[in-house]
Amino acid sequence: MSNLVEWFEFQVPGKVICAQQCVDSIGTEMDNIGGSKVLVVTDEGVENAGLTQKVIDGMDSGSAEVVGVFNEVPPNSEIQVVQRCYDKVKEADADCLVSVGGGSVMDTAKATAILMVETGDLLDHQSAVYTPSGPMPPHIAVPTTAGTGSESTFAAVIADHEQEMKLIFQAPEMAPNVAMLDPMLTTTLPPGLTASTGMDALTHCIEALHSEMHEPICDGLALHGIRLITRYLARATADGEDVDARTYMLIAANMGGVAFANAFVGIIHAMAHSLGGHFGTPHGIANSILLPYGMEFNLRYSDEGIPASYRRVAEAIGLDVASDDDDTASRKAIEWLRGLTVEIGLPQRLSEVGVPEDGLEAATSEAMIDGCMFNNPGDPEEEEVLELFKKAY
Ligand SMILES: [Fe+2]
Image 1 (cartoon, protein in one colour):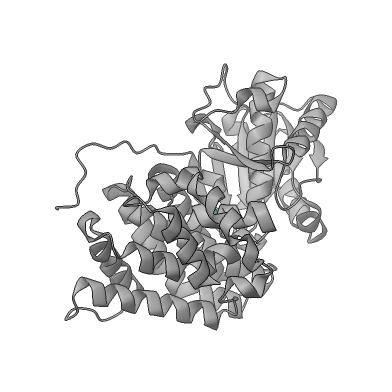
Image 2 (cartoon, rainbow, N blue to C red):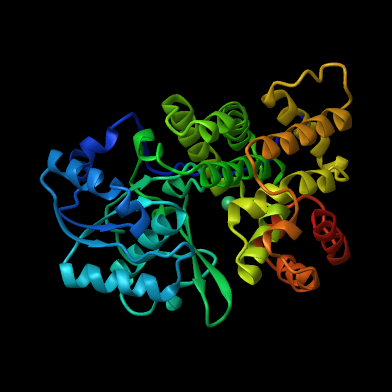
């Protein structure tokens, strides 16, 4: 147990329910946590796919009433959207939230909950650790992708276009009270989004494992997340109606979310955030391209036990590495992951996804000050990160 940390904290988020059609009982769950007037937060795509209505129908199982639907959440939510969502809360006189969608939708609801407690301007409450001045409103999150795990994390990422920054609002109280994992709400997600959001989940698991903040509970969650994603992501991508694969992907994304909510993520997310901020590169695609390069890079931190950690990734994938040293086992895992991204049809290089080559230096500067960079092992230098961007280009 040489990897055992001397001291750690692990914060457990809310209740998780997982079953086909579990949203049919969402009204009962809302009764349990004391909400009576519900604002449903969602986006137009999810609404048009009929998923929001399924959840609204499920509210009939309890006594809470749906008093409004806010469907204006864009792919990367922003301060003004949260403000409009809060305006809708006031207009409808809502006292609780149900979010139905991907990470942007769930994060919008989490940030709206801050305004429901504090009122005023969201920017006034931005800090590394937000301390609510009163009880947060009841919130049930229903993810329609298996990726972010935001239904069970403590943070909301909201863009501020005036400052050209992504702001992070964070507090243990921000975790939704209940996460409902219903695979039937993910079967219509197209293959490209299934693949890229699934790779985001896989990156959460691997980065939680190599983070300086990793500890045994998060390691366990991350490793089983890796086991499930490497078995089921290709299946869910090839056949969206494969309900078993969809179920395991939702579970794995949730485990990755809980792992990284506690252990945080590292260099790969720091670089992906920067590409997203500068060039709008979709988060899952940026992570998917950068993951093997970031792992190769981190192999240099053998004093921090990285090759030994990645041997465990290889074992979780199910590779036969019994007779290999840690470095060889790690490289087998990295090559296997590259093969997975080819199999599920994702781009392999940054040059394929609209990132301009002359923008890599600016992206590097931004990545260096991203909070995730500080949890990476070692102390990556600016030139090394630029080199890494170029390798992935
Ligand atoms: Fe992520």
